[in-house]
Image (cartoon, rainbow, N blue to C red; front, side, top):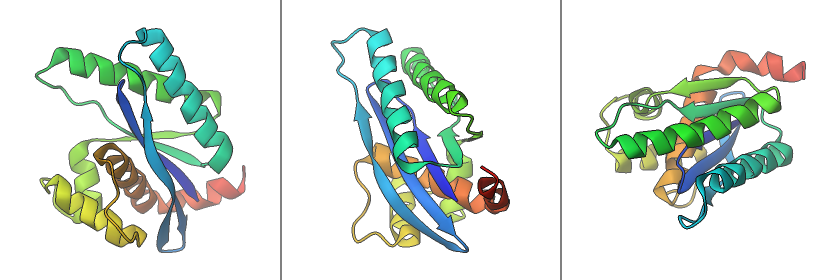
Amino acid sequence: MIVLGIDPGTAITGYGVVERSGSRIAALDYGVIETPSDRPLPERLLEIRAAIADLIATHGPALVAVERLFFNRNVQTAFAVGQARGAVLLTAAEHGLPVFEFTPNEVKIAVTGYGRAPKEQVQRMVQIVLGLPDLPRPDDAADALAIAVCLAHTRADAAPAEAAR
């Protein structure tokens, strides 16, 4: 079962692709989609959508995991993240992929066993779980891998659905 994890943002959207085979989870790809701040928002969202569509075409995930929006003191940041999430959700829907949403605490619990784990601990556990030689970087990509690992752990029952695709 291949899972695409997304940490949405207008300036930087992290992505992580993992494959679960039995109890083993391996990283297939991870990185970030960066959009220039001097471009109009609709163009930036279109760029995010196109990049996500390319990832789906390249890796053929069965499921998509996205960080759930939580309220932030900075309303502009919350709106920007919400708009990027919308582009991701739309792209997944266009490809007929089920989307699962997780809060940052749910991801931390799934990856480290502790909902208030610091970012460094989450990155280290992602490195260990995926057998990566180095800590995944940048932070947005590491977060996206953690989101993908969270779904791969919590939705082990999703594998039979993949075979029906």
